[in-house]
Length: 310
Image (cartoon, rainbow, N blue to C red):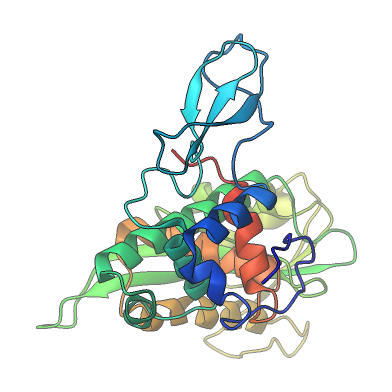
């Protein structure tokens, strides 16, 4: 089977196409190399003043039979330096198989069965893949959604655990977010509370000036019109209507977004509070790049190769 570059993110790849990648370690190593997943040619990070780049050279003492060496300071690094394969106790081919399963939204238990690894290994690698999502989303957080002539719906939702013996909500975690009706662009962020002092700066951070903002009647939104970004603010009173009969204001799109986000809790049989940020980042990454079964694995390759692990 010929090796190929992941250059077309729309190429359709399934387990039949990728069987050799998941079973042959030499094939997996070369596949990672030709798709730019190693730091060959990248700037040396051994010392801030070093202007060298990493070159690849043979080294029979290494598991991969190769290593990196800086062209200037001559510092040596593992070929797997700061990649998704760093400190891996499993084969590179297995990491690719795990990445395929995560990209295609396999459950942890099904992935464990398919890849023949422990559930703990699956959990650890799925977390690493989500860390790449957060790295990517954080890099793009300067981009604002909406703008003149566009409508952005905003809302908050709670993601929490419950005590099974009483049903009382504990450790409630709030998430604030929004969606642009015209473009489908989204933002979402965990917040410590729903106070005005918390929400208004996030509105300014994520929503472009001149946008029309729709919200419910929560008091934390009362002073949106007073912000210098010249927002137009329309509200709907959910105690009376789902859609305001006079202005047509509603937040049905962002409420649909919350349903999609919260479905992750069902999929993974609950989410640990410390991991909510990572799950939000995965949700935003899948939405922004329109991830589906046809493009999931190529996009996942690009995602993890751009993340500085280690």
